[in-house]
Image (spheres, rainbow, N blue to C red):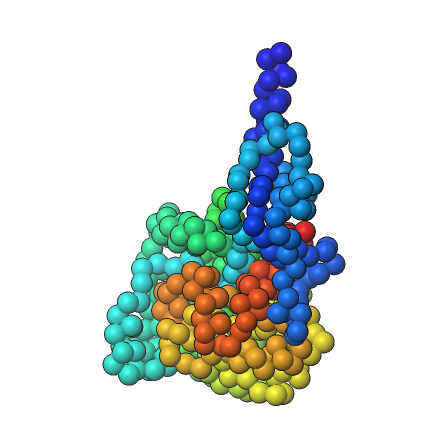
Length: 387
């Protein structure tokens, strides 16, 4: 009898039943990886619904009249008057960082541009100095505080980039912290190597040597240690050129690593077409976009990702969401959470900005932050929809 009771308790603890859901949003079949164009304005739903979760996996859902009748094995959550939808999928973040860059907020108020702040020793290299002088333990503790905060705001999956170390030891430190966050198991995490975020001070006059370090040492070592899911490059004037980017992506491809590229944030010089050529999973930023870029993205696996929080905090143009969606393309939304240009991981804020500043319908913004965000991390079969 004792063993039976123990077994029954285990069953009860593994099953959760949500009942009386006012509206269950984002019902999709298994074949839907992302939505694009006009489909982005549609969110399939069920009114007066139930949902069964077994050990974190959606097992069953439907109209409330068909809900399970044997309730003893369930932990029951009454959702009367509430809507249920997938958690936010944040496909672009720099949430692992040390300290802050609050002084740059004042610099921007005084009129300094992103590049002027960087030229004065601020920006990415400011974060590099902080991170290199922070222990792995301290970096993990700081990062977990932020992770818990974004979970409380509805984020259930997140991509995290390195890129504030910019040397062998510190980039590995960041990637190991990301790996430890993955092991927490209370949020799905994808790890992106962004050694090509900026040129570190010690390589400012030896840029080819730094690229060789990325290509010949960083990528092979971190890949062999199973610390990388994706590889990213900040393809932008004053940072990494088209030639630099191509060299890094070709090296990553040798290890089967898929690119996710920062591109068209301040300038347009062919980065989108290059990313598409290298089968990038996503092209992120796109504040500066042309018809040629949109044409290059048509019928490709590459999904555009907008980062409205960055536009808000930097006071720069927003990604032209209407041009992308009205052209029949998909679009994802992400936070770009970082200590300087987008110091917030609140996806609710991101979705609001997308509607207010980018002209997206609420349905489009929700699709962009759930199923399309999941696709931009290669997680569309695990999160982003009720399936």
